[in-house]
Image 1 (cartoon, rainbow over the protein chains, first blue to last red):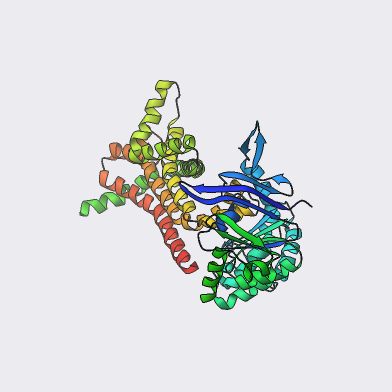
Image 2 (image 1 turned 90 degrees about the horizontal axis):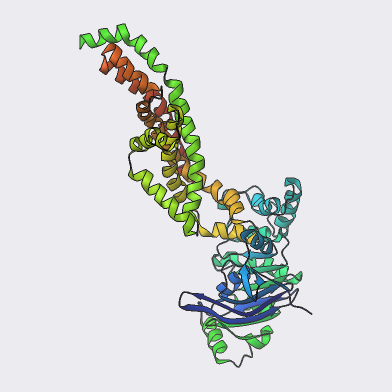
Length: 255
Length: 222
């Protein structure tokens, strides 16, 4: 079976500094993959490259067999126009560490703006969809609240509903709970767990190792811009023979 | 001093009535220049923010040139200079375009600062939802930026309104144009110009109050 997401020899440099040094990764349809690793290992950059928030320096990203961000031309590549890129990004949901809700819009409007302006749904259709999605994340009672009136956990759940409303093939979570107070992390992880159980295809960058072990089909351990190892959670988290993985996991446990 | 009040009582109504004959032109020039500046300024701001040097550099040059030279000189270039290359703007056209391109440079910087003040995450979130950069600008960035931009934009409107006095030198029949004619006619410089000042104040004070109210509202909102 063809993977939903296929990353081939992905490289990214910022000036002299090489952040991704040749990443290969396949994610199957319905699979939940968590990416763990020390700060600065390139996890976030990997995620941002997948939907072209960062332009890769080299390598290929395929979603559903389709090359993302570029189009082959005369043996080389040309970058897609803003409009073409926008169409490809519809299919890839992104949940940010800092939520990035639109502060001038209510919770419901945050969820409905893209379905209306990008997919061309009518206001009524979009609001029905928005209702459903906010219900799903447990915020059906906060439709008309502006983000500033919501807690961090609630804001992140609205952000997840906003992504769900676009019905993406693939969802990317960039340290979705790192900016939250400890007591608010659980409500966001619950929603993410529910999505994983529904069989959505998800790539999760996280520091919540225990959570990653519970919900993931596979764990990818990254260090210094490379995939050190990847495999089922038990193998990586408890039986890894790789020294770098062991050092990282023991440091995490010390905290 | 007694004589001052006598003259005012005698000639005041006539001076006021004559000056108000220029009110319509003043308002037309100010409004026309403002509309021109609001639109053209946005174009300049987008060029200024572009990644393409070919767009960015002309915008920078434009802003620097306009802000670094007197509006009066710009007006002269348009009204007296353009005929040399075959264009003959009417006084009204020269006035609107001259003040318009002037205001556009200031507005472009206000727009740019307002847009730059919106956190990068807002643009990124909009892009990840499948919006184009232009769509993100329209639905996400500008509606937020406008809240911080409205007070300085209104200040530009006040400046434009006052700068309409400059266009009397290209013979646009606005308030100051009538004022100068009145002085020749009545020889009452003090009365005429003070009364002209009073008319400008009647227009600018409400605008300034409006800015102050906006800023109070913005502080309350945060």
